[in-house]
Image (cartoon, rainbow over all chains, first blue to last red; front, side):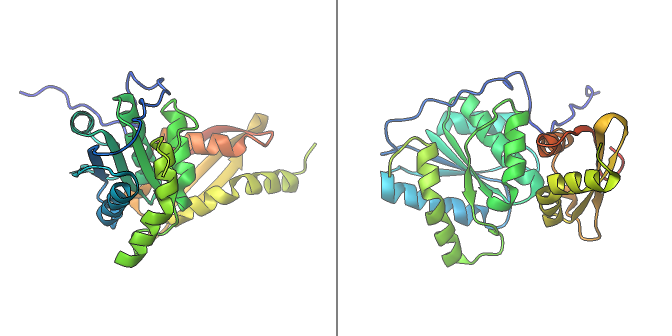
Length: 179
Length: 84
């Protein structure tokens, strides 16, 4: 017989919840492995791939590893976050383009920072409020995340590339790297 | 002392952009004033509401508390669809 089921907390809160310190930033991205955390929302993977291409082109970032979380409305599972933190030097997670997924995307970024890995959460600008509120609930008010112009889900390949380019100054700033 | 109409205007202004946020996922926001300047916010699902898109209650409470910060009112509670 199995024990009682553990209830999933949609905020991802745990004992680390009061830590509002960013992970140490690398001096540069040259050759670093970039984790791409897909939250399963439409166009999340193309956007992440384009951001990685920009990181390579602008800052010499190394290869990427793509991860997919189980469900967009919840922070990624602890074991997945630990795996990402163990395998990657920096992480980009996307895309928050609804209430719950924008909050969860910001939570993923904060949880990765607490695991010691610099992370950028990309949220559409219609849902910045949800992301900001999640940061506050996580005990990390003012946590910086990148805003992509809404919408993202309905864009074609060229438009996604444009969104990625537009968000790069924020991505690089959050990672502590000058373009 | 504010009239009910003035109170309504203050609260409608405070929640304006959050109504838009909720509407993006197919939800409507309404409020009622209880005693002692406390506000109950109710989120109601529209016909096309995205059930998976609703932010969790603690996040919703943080959003609504922030919305009320510049007003004389404070959040009493948030009622989500299903009566949470």
